[in-house]
Image (cartoon, rainbow, N blue to C red; front, side, top):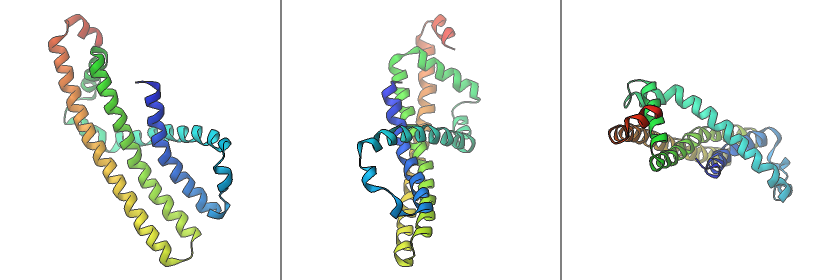
Length: 195
């Protein structure tokens, strides 16, 4: 995978993380304490981009752990009888064909973004609940904002999860099919070395 692609992927995930982190901080210290003018400056950008990238890495790892424990194993088991079979097939595809490896890496990027945003949307909803309940006393405005904000986050989370699920299902199917294709059409020595 190109380094630029990985950087962009983690920035996209990190934007969601910076949203919920900012909402929690604003809930603790108040919306009026946010330095709007300072945030618009170039020095702030120098600070924010690495922070977004770091939060993207952390969010990606947490989402990977959660999804692996809750969903990935059963989904992978529909296409592969054991984890080692999947790992061998994936290794063969990545080492056996540059074109197939590029397709696989592109698919993995989309999977990671959907997985990250599925978790981020839940955390944004929680942070929104916290910050608005703590900082705003106008009950009507607050409840309206909470209802629409939570509904939007829930919809985004479910849509991201569904996209992750469909992309993963297709990815496992493609890995199996592409590995079988390479086994049938490659030299036995190359296949043995890749596995």
